[in-house]
Image (cartoon, rainbow, N blue to C red; front, side, top):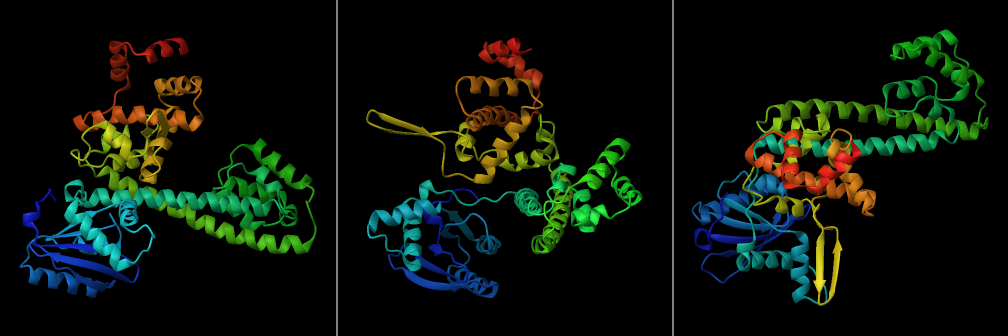
Length: 421
């Protein structure tokens, strides 16, 4: 929704959300009287309240200020076309509260009133919530959920590894990759060293071949290692409980691996249907994982960022400078969408394997004394400037064209590229 003047709003509302109920403060336009209310978090209660607003103000626009950009309450309120949502950063409200309440006293009704004050006093600095298309919002949720499930996979494999070290460390050397079906199936069938050593050689060979281990020497080496292994312990008080715990982690890991596969399928289908996806699909190192995440990172509202610098700051890639008198302190941005920053940093690191200039630029930053993470962020900073222009002009990235542009500008990176080649 476009920016709207005060005169077009029939009322202004500050809404402090919670899990079970929401506190609100309403002020009709042209009136100084405020009305405090409490709203239960149920679809019926929210619909009844919004219906009351529509009837009372004859369907005219109503501005609502709240500390959310997404969530159940936002989803519920967005279905009503006459409501205009103005999200604010929770830190903004906290600082505003502390400015007038040095005691740090806090209460939900008071926060609702403060949100109303922010909306009335500083609405020129607030942007109304302008959701993207259903396809883009679906893709955004899918890629974020997938990344969270991948994090769960890492935690499960770490716990599984730690448990196996207590009684069955040999299997960790037999299988380098822990997040695989063969590893899960092996532990489900033979959870202890004794169990696998009792298995016949033909049985083990059939198992490995069924899991696509085609090299005979690899199978022979594994079977020999199994038969020659010495148990870490024979204490049933250690083996029995840990073997049971391993089965728990294996079951969790199976579900997690299948969930990642399901997310990959849904993400691929959703991303392919978006017209901007080809812009990111061919990026070096993007692939099926990072291409959809980069599409979500840029979005489809090209008017949202006036320049690449705006996106660099919003994503937390650009550093922050604090200056007072003769002192200055440069640090990374603490307040930013963490998943968005993670997307750019992780892809920048991956791009070094596929883009020659990216690898040279990273090494150039390391030679200046920057740590690994700082060098990767510097590369991400540079990538955002490049991709921003491609995104704005709807032109796919072409590395040859970019290198020619560097040569025309006389960039020092070209000199380093010549030395590295």
